[in-house]
Amino acid sequence: MDIKFCIQCGNSTHLTIPEMDTHHRHQCQTCGFIHYQNPNIIAGCLVYHREKVLLCKRAIEPRYGLWTVPAGFMENGESTRAAAIRETREEANAMVELKDLFFIANLVPINQVYMLYLAELVNEDFYAGIESLDVQLFSEQQIPWENLAFKTVEITLKKFFQARQNNQFELHEIEFKADRSVIWF
Ligand SMILES: [Zn+2]
Image (cartoon, rainbow, N blue to C red; front, side):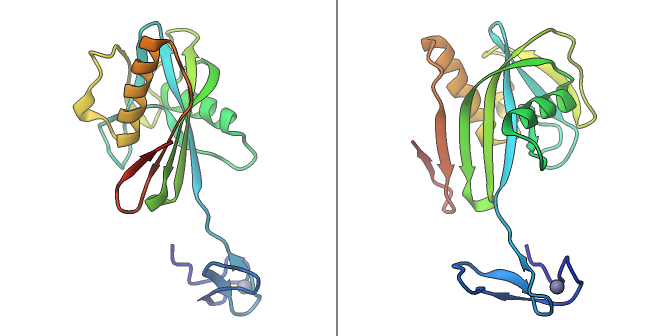
């Protein structure tokens, strides 16, 4: 993002490599404040209940009307686990018992890191939060594969059902590169 004015003093910034730094930054020409921009972490849950998983139909852009797992940007002062639980409560009003980390995706072109935990649904009293049009449990056969919001969701769900079959839930890590290729680790 282009930052034209200093968030500290309101004067103009310029793009420069500050002393002792290796990257270009928007630095204030008056007070010297450096506006660092770093990747954002998106934390969420792959919520399961018996043989089904919980998906939310998005009531917000981007990808309005498509299905996704409950996930969202971490807040300051929060852990990834706390963020995953909070997002699941906000988007699906679902109570979960958080398990292991299951999936990490580095979305390099958009400067995001996506972290999904396995989470067991505690009860079936879930309902759509303000950012969802609908929340439902889906078996593997019922998943709306053609109407998933993001490629990462499709990959995660496929890995989950594979893992279930083999009863082996190890962590999966992938990287989406700028040239759109995908690397698996
Ligand atoms: Zn300034």
